[in-house]
Image 1 (tube, rainbow, N blue to C red):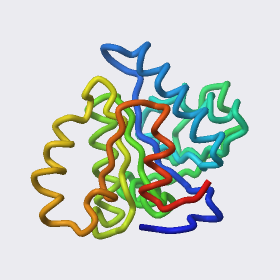
Image 2 (image 1 turned 30 degrees about the horizontal axis):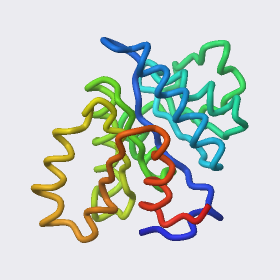
Image 3 (image 1 turned 90 degrees about the vertical axis):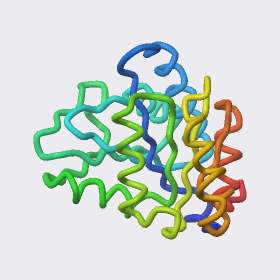
Length: 188
C-alpha cells in the first residue's frame, strides 16, 4: 500500500493496444479509461516501443484535462494529434522500461495485445514486481486477463504479502478508478 500518493494524483503506467481482433471495442475501452483516469487526476505514462498503440487512451485523457507522458526511443515520431504531449526519449529499451517503472506508482493493464501484456509484465518486474509495492490493476473485460487472475489466486496469494492489493482485477471501466484508488490507498 502506498498511501496518499502524490496528494492523491498518482502516476500510472497504462498498457493497452488497439491492434488486432476487436480493435474497435478496445479503442472504446481505452477512451473510457483515459477519460476516467484523467478526471481523477491521474498522470498517465505510456511506453512507446517502436509504435504507440494506445492513442485513444492518450487523446481522451488529454481532452479530459489529464496529464500524459510518453517514454519512447530517440526515433519516435508522435502522430500530429499528439504533438503537444511531452515525450521523454531514451534509446536503450531496457532503460526505457526501467524509467517507466520508476515514474509509475501503479500499473494499469487494459485488454490489448500479447505485446502490451508482455510490456506491462516486463515493466512491473523491473520495478520490483510484488516486492516493489507497486500494484497492477487489470481490466478483465471479456475475461481478457482470466488466466492471470487464476495465477494470482494460485501463486501470488501464497507467496506475496497483501497479494489482493498487488494484482487487482476489475470487470468494467466504471470500477477501474475504484480499484486503482483502493490498491494505492488513495483517497479521492
